[in-house]
Image (cartoon, rainbow, N blue to C red; front, top):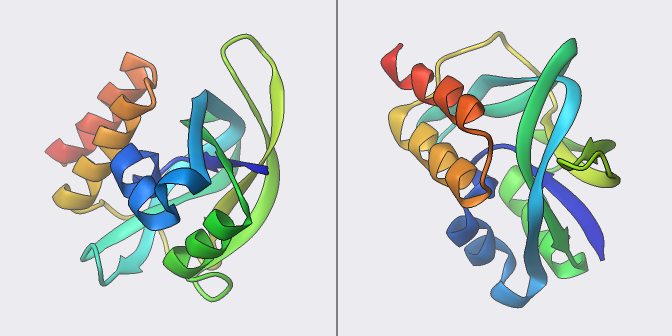
Length: 149
């Protein structure tokens, strides 16, 4: 079993279970990735939207959901994320509210072509995921502010 840190639409519990299979993924808790910033870049034909990625940025924080996944779930995520063509995998250290650290797998866009505004449907999926994972209210408000752009 591995830890997986979801920060985009895969935070949505219904979506990740559909993608990975009910018994292959388990939500553990909310967590954060320090010194990274959430961005939207590229374009997904499925979402008709730029999609989430992260870039290193001192002092920034990306909140997300920490999941436990098995090998079958990782293979499913590889397919959905277009690994290695569209997303690369990286192991990072994320933290929970108590300061415990976890080595976790994340997917990062393989190329960034500037920061863009996500589509409404995609952003709503991320917002549902943020609520499913119990992310901080202030972080959810930041995400909601993107709807008004």
